[in-house]
Length: 233
Image 1 (cartoon, rainbow, N blue to C red):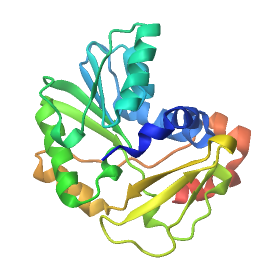
Image 2 (cartoon, rainbow, N blue to C red):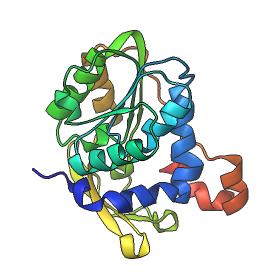
Image 3 (tube, rainbow, N blue to C red):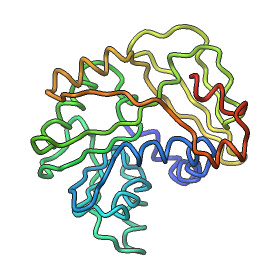
């Protein structure tokens, strides 16, 4: 099956400048990754290498990016060629990742919410566990919009088609409103318990959930009321 992201590479790249990403998602994910100096880092669902490059800039040693979309990887390699940073990129599914060695940190922004069923989710966490050195850490940012029917995200440049409570594994669409680059992606709803179970079954221990936050700059620039729905859902 051709990955849906193949046809929207440039638009998805542009979406990284949306306010909810600049002032919440990106700083939250990077802070959660912690100190990366001299670490070997595997970046799953790397897309065109957005976080992968930031990880390298943060002082990581070996950095490898993997994405299921060949087109995303092609763009990532193109940017690596234009501005060499020593990053390796590979196309492939996270749940059946090739042996790329072991890593101190595995980063996965919007990977687990792409699992269409629990078997795939378990396959992802097991592959992640195999990729970590003993005592290594796994950091995931997870899209969770499927749990909140009827919430209006238009202020953040998004809409969803979630109108009722969804069971685990149920698909739902997120449409990004970017003028001529408007596009939709499909995510899959999973409960917190499902994620916890998949991590535990893979031997990933000391699980902790972080609450989403917004930068001071974002609060000043848009006002606290703007972020209420985002922080609550």
